[in-house]
Image (cartoon, rainbow, N blue to C red; front, side, top):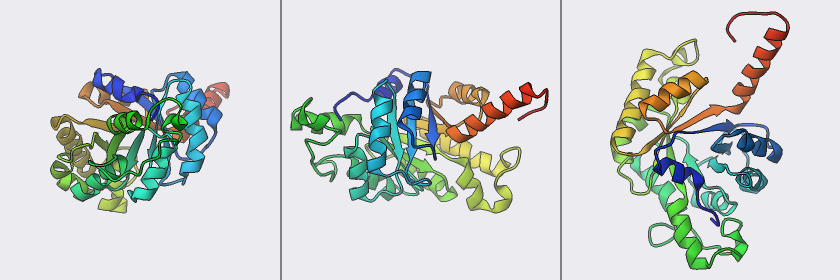
Length: 264
């Protein structure tokens, strides 16, 4: 990676960082727009919508060019796939269904060069500034330090294994997801106006364990007020689904324009 990871720098200073998760809308202009709007990072979702390493290149280039860090939720931790996202210039990875210390260790090893990991060398990749901005050794050293690794804790068994997961050296923290947590417990837990108490207990435990281990928590917030509450709790990475954010803004505008009232 030819640039410092601005997100890691902000986290080290204790700042709360906010960024949208994109499951659709693969537009470099939109990623650039979000960075200019003041978001600290953007997440390209390679799990659900399938943006691949080639597609993420221009998205990353647009957002990074105006100061935002780019993360990717990878489809899985397969090392050759992780390698391609990193060489495309992504500065952090989120591993879905990170259910064990073995899963977390696999992500870290795929993200680090030897001797810590197994990432293959590519000193003329986009991540290495095509060889113009760093020597090969400088790239290896900086990339090993800068790349952010997060495990997505979204199943009850992952919460049970979290103490072991958090002991993995090189795992920076956890993205705590309530949606799949609820769905795994049963469809009756999924959706609805409020989070079920059983799901809330698992989410709270995951957050508390991660913070107690001195690692960062990423958590999705539906509203700015919820984001502020989570920040007060110590959550330093807050994301929101861009599609949902846009839907609410559109609904609020049209409702006001048409004289409609009520929550949206």
